[in-house]
Image (cartoon, rainbow, N blue to C red; front, side):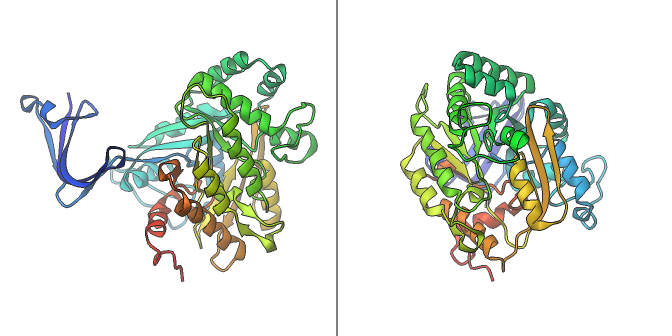
Length: 415
């Protein structure tokens, strides 16, 4: 039996209305209990937290930390490792290396230092998830979970065509069990299928080739299956048209779908991920504007949606990696540098392109604004998650910067 008593800390627990009270926290067998339930005769580990903040461990809902794409990113970016090697201290600390593509040890240590205890790998294709779990198991200290990608799975598309919701839910249940995944992930729904057959992406209302339904139909069908399965995290959606000017309208239409999803209980129906990348107004890069205000308004009026930011970090060299191979093809032609692309049997696709956000770049500046604007205008901050879509818009080690920007107008005045 493990008993821990954390004494005299400034405790913050928003869900229970505790805002900086000096109190004690008792833990017994991994659960928080009333301090009176601890048994002194069985030994208690006492931690003096005087002058320190005590709060729940951080949860990162979307961070690319494991799987084949991470290893490929490491191989593509030797410069990411040249000056970042840190020797281990045997037997307690293992050697660390990498920034945008860190090794497993640095991932665990850096998250733990920031107070994070749970991190979600947000995109693992079913046939490659064994590799994902091998890497997750090697990351020390923190808890991990994964979302399985199902957006262009050919068997799934056939089941949607057959209009058999029960069989679709059973199939998704099997995938979750077989891959030991926590949630279902959609990436640019249906676009990989169109990309393979016709070399193009899809907007939310475009019909898939061969099939006579749209990405909106895919989202609704899988979201309702997730309701039947009563998943804790119902559906994680990477919207169509990511990275294209004007895509904020697609994001709004995606969020609106949540209002028409048949729910088995009250609560969230959709989670829209990295909205910075799908929050662009304007019809070209030269007329780009932030659609953050409109997205925040939809979030405020729609209680069935949550989102994370995908916050861009100025002057940060990153390694973009996503199952959205369509957009990565476009980004490669913008950057004209390295590019990796892959199609994984009938499960999905992926692409990897190194990139750097610049303070003096107009587009990058608008990208920086969008995530902050959404968060600052949101009324229910519990449905807004801080994330950089690591390592796409920034690194997870940049989170303290984002917190500072959200808390301080002065901090947002970047020179």
